[in-house]
Length: 245
Image (cartoon, rainbow, N blue to C red; front, top):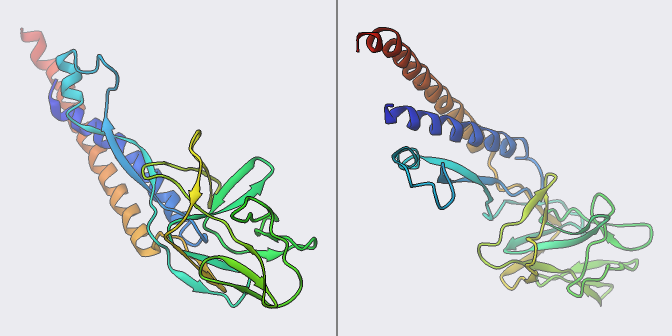
């Protein structure tokens, strides 16, 4: 069988998966703290026996999407004027307590709940560096670049910013919150600056996201057309050439 068929097949599968990713990125381009996902490639066949046959070797000459990885590129900082809105510049995630456990987010659209706690838009407590909920007394709030939260000049707590070892992949949960890898403990983010009165936009540009989506669609159409051509040629061979043998 012509190896071009395998190239077209893996290309179509890869482009269809990439198309889903591009669509999700574009849909969340206006979501604060959203981390865009970028595809990576792997061999089509996996396992110790993948290269034992000529067919396996041929198929594995062409890459297939192995999945998506979060892009940790910086998003634009947007001023809001709300003293409890916090944006992170650099590495790190805010840690929040949810009914399902600890979660991590770059969405710093916070407010003071009725019980005085610093919470997310969903009402989930934002945790300090000590892993405790932060009680914000009434008064003028100031948050330093190091995350130290003060009210009327008195230090209340330090907003927790946590990072993960290089290569650790967080699992998306919803639009802009993430689950830590199993068995990997977060560590304090040392290369981060907190900006008060601002939030971080998604790190996916709308224009670039639209272009990516169009490119993926066209590439998928090209691969589909190529498969159609190969299929037609195979049918011709089977009906016209093989009977002569």
